[in-house]
Amino acid sequence: MLWLRTWRLGIKSLLLHPMRTALTVLGIFIGVAGVISLLAIGEGISQEAQRQIEGLGADNIMVRSKKPMNPPEGSANSFIMPYGLLREDYALLVETIPTITSALPIREMRREVRYADNTIEGRVVGCTPEYADVTRLYIERGHFVTDAEVKTSQNHCVLAAHVVERLFPYEDPLGRRIYLQEHNDYYTVVGVCRDRAPTAAIGGSLDAQDFSNDIYIPISTMRQRIGDTVVMRSGGSREGETVELNQITLRIDSIDNVQKTAELVERMLEKNHGKLLDTAVIVPLELLEQARRTKMMFMVIMGLIASVTLVVGGIGIMNIMLATVTERTREIGVRRALGARRSDIVRQFLVETIAMSVLGGLVGVGIGLLCPLAVDASRAILKSVAPDLIAGLPDIMRDVTPIIVPLSIPFAFCISVMIGVMFGLYPAYRAAQMDPIEALRHE
Image (cartoon, rainbow, N blue to C red; front, side, top):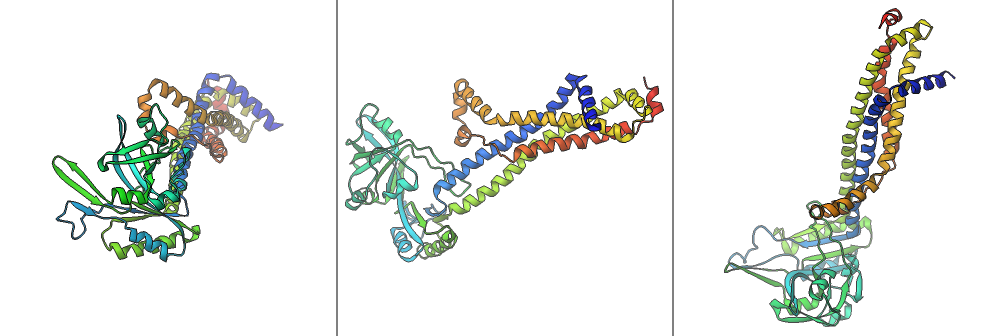
């Protein structure tokens, strides 16, 4: 009954000054809503980054060609630089490492592609049928590159959705023939891919991948029809490179064997490449672990930043309660004269600060839970008002959806109550230490 009366009296005292109480509560609820919202946005960004890494396959190893800073011996006097992965590397890895269940060779190069009067600069990708599964490409019409087409080196191709829009705005591309200008060669369209969102760059290990301008052909056709050498001309000068394979994606039999296999791959590549530094071994499993560690650091930093707002709200509570103690000096003197103990005075003022903290915490939790809706609504408004601004944002910012972290709700609420108690103790102690006689004399 004593606590119930104390709570009733405390709430009645707060309601006597509604504007002051509301402004005090404002600091707490902004802090709580900030903690929940910032952690939700951080979780959304982190989940998107992890999803992209997981899309690479945690049981995969990617071996990529990398242009060396110094040209290999024997190529210094030639304008064509040979570097990168060899078909010999591909055969050596597949034949000698038992933990590799499948291997996907990939060759890429930029080329101008034409149909009728329409031209586009695309990325021609020589690949095998497994490429669609590894990169999560889905066919909308026709079919992807088949084993039979690879075996017979057919002049067939599969187009990305954006390429179809540019080259075939008004007709069905299936069965039509596109023209690779630099090689005077025609390719029959046998499939069209669905639109595929680009992947963001992941740290310094993996570049961003844009699939919108891709043309997929059998890798055997690329070798026979196009070759390994690319020559670029600009300003009267020529520069070229010879690359047999841009990437080899290895699928490992077990996640437990990924790290060991990656180390073995690096050692085997040294046989053909020595110290050229023209290859790189990328392990998505390592990137995933790195992303998880970064997520934890990011969440802690975001939580600390939002917690500063809660501390500021707590300071506001302390200031208001100190002012309240001064205003209610005579009331404190009357209560002490009527027999109230110091503990009763402390309890009275603590109840008021806890009530404001709990109210601010509850309102903050409610506002924080609306964060995903608020972000979507803000993004929709910005798209209609400032589309150029939205288009200039990174993909992960344009598409991120905040994900509420369940633990953030009790965490933020409990912190708000603790701050109310901590910052309410000093004003309550000041009130309890007043001399009753001096308090009664106060005007």
